[in-house]
Image (cartoon, rainbow, N blue to C red; front, side):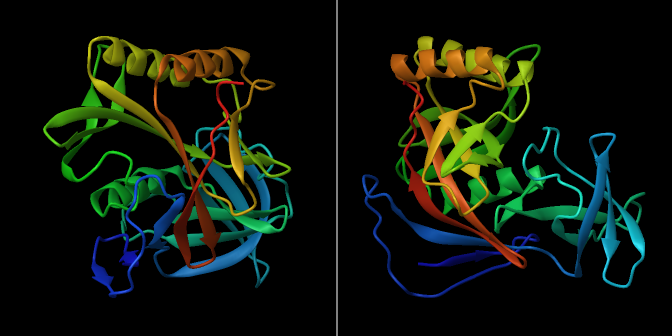
Length: 264
């Protein structure tokens, strides 16, 4: 079935049937609607990591929240078209949120706060079907004094620790992560490996929010330590999954599981 997920978790479905085989690369589409009101503009600058200035069609300049801790390499060029949405939280200092940027002819999702919501809904509705039927999902699991992982999933009576990463960088048709050096990302990889060695199931999921990619690779040219750590754990058996999400001005759709070439 096609699953439409509002940001406030109001759902409705139709009865079109899709393959549920975990070996099939075709997934059942899952759609996250970008909340209204939305406005379009062009990016003037991104600064202080979590802020951006945009120019609206009427010429006014708006400072918006940019919920992305990465460099946004390749999708933060001044003059790029953008879509922003207004938060329902009236107490926010910057009520508008940068949702997506137009780069290389496609919309790229840069709001990383949506990534976990998208993956969680995809797991619950078996759109991401790599772990079998899901019994429960717990968010933000502390696994050490320094680290939390995104999800603890219980499926078939077993616990699975899952870390989710948003991927917005691409070159040619290849999705790349990370877009900046990430000591935190390396720490998450090592926590997943530690849990795996203790006998737990663990997995890493990349949510690639752009339609112009066909496969995933670690970005060794940007963070050699992260890439080498990921490749080592991949060869040792850590499941590394990548799902492509097509981004539109009003919605984001998980549409395809793409090959991961992490062991090369």
